[in-house]
Image (cartoon, rainbow, N blue to C red; front, top):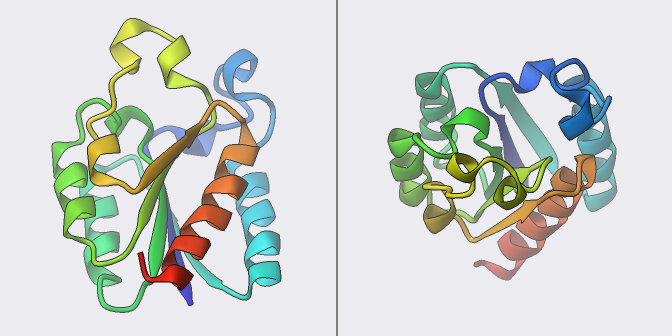
Amino acid sequence: MKILVLHGPNLNLFGRREPHIYGHTTLAQIDAQLATLAEELGVRLETIQSNHEGALLDFLHRHIDEAQGALVNPAGLTQHGVSLHDAIKAMPFPVIEVHMSNIAARESWRAHSIISPAVKGTIQGLGPLSYLMGLRAVVALAQEGR
C-alpha cells in the first residue's frame, strides 16, 4: 500500500518557525517518525514538501493511479488553495488533512479551511502526533476501502 504525504508551504521551517506554536520538531524528524510508523503498518510512503501549490497538484496527479491514500498538511493553502481542494476531490482514495496547531484556536482568518470539505477527516492541534494519527487513520480507511 502506498500512502502520499504532502507538506505545504513553509513547513520546511518546522523547528525554526514560531516554535511557541509549532514546537521544535523539524520536518525531517516528522518524516522520520512517519517512516517508522509506516514500516510498522506495512505501508510505503511517498513524501513531498513544496512552497508551490502546483508542485503539490502535480504530485497528486502523478500518483492518482498508484496510491491508496494521502495525508496532507496544506499549511498556508488551507484558506486559499482552491486548486488543491479540487485536486483532492478528484482523488479516488481517502485523504486526511492534518495540522500541527489547532487552527480554530488561532487568528480568525485561519479558522476556516477550504480543504476540509474535500477530505475524509481532519486531525489538528496535536503537534507531530497529528501526523501520526493521520497516517493511522488514512491507512485504516484505505484498508476498509473508504
